[in-house]
Length: 158
Length: 299
Ligand SMILES: [Zn+2]
Image (cartoon, rainbow over all chains, first blue to last red; front, side, top):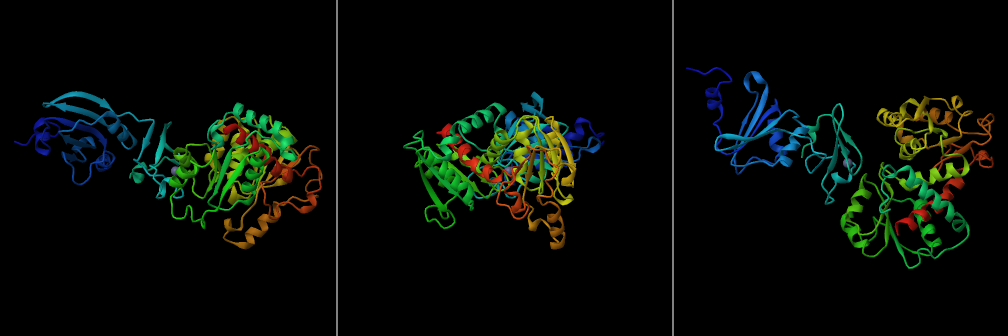
């Protein structure tokens, strides 16, 4: 019999539970691939990675990474595009740690500057770096040229 | 004080200290010489021409008894041709005690400061910052008018002009009332106005000089560039209405000062030059004591 959505059996069908690793849950629907970009997981990852998008009625994406426990500073960048995401560290099928993503105060090498004439958009050996300000919305201030990225941050992911 | 990259990096106290030092050094800037920086070497590195700024640094360093190595026009200099800025800075900072940098890319000075083992002074990075211009503007206002709670009108291109943006920010530290006078196409951005208002600055916006000229203490004129207008006729009509003549000045305050970052095109009629209000040539000269102050504080 087909399990109802949301029941364990249903989850089982879509993605196997992972033994050890990280589950990133509550990703804003449609942002899962950007999450992988932020984590530097490219088309040939060493780990087993599962991506579930548009999880039925919940309108969220999920990313599971087998065999790798992501560090908080790695995952906090996800808050840029998905502020409600949660990180679950799994060991031996059990969730041993769970926390929400926290916006870091600075990010480096994750987003490129919106200003075409910025020194970070040249061949100079410098990584784009931003100070993150959080008021009503998330704003990225370029440390070098002072430009501000506030909308469509995902468009500027490197 | 280490690097001088953006005026925003300085508090009001720090700015006051620089202006105080400039006042002490002004007599030396006129005629004298000092050995305060004797044995020190300043490198000037200009990736785009700005003869006025370069000369002003050169004179400032020499008045203080120091030496200047100038890399000349960088585009043609074999020393740095084809080399990236980061490498050039790493090399030059081994030769000199401080570096003055002008570069067409925004953020260049900040990056340079990360590769330099000696202080970097930003002499303009693209449309970004030019902090020594702002400091000499502040010095002029303090010396020839009043800096605290000044009423200042910025006239002309308030959208692209970096001089205006930096000076308006700095004046917000001194409780200024700011009058923005520009054609519709060249108004200051909302982002920048919001930042000024947030800092407690009063802002009045208008398209007519006549609305403000009789109430302000400082009239800060800027160039309106032809390239900003798709239609040349529109350019000519706009430029005509933002021109200062003797006639424009007939009802102004006695102590009004007129400033301009120079070079001017025709924003100010030459017949105004002889008036007691005209301060732009003196303003340009004040670049020397202000840059002397900065050099003496970083080395
Ligand atoms: Zn930038």
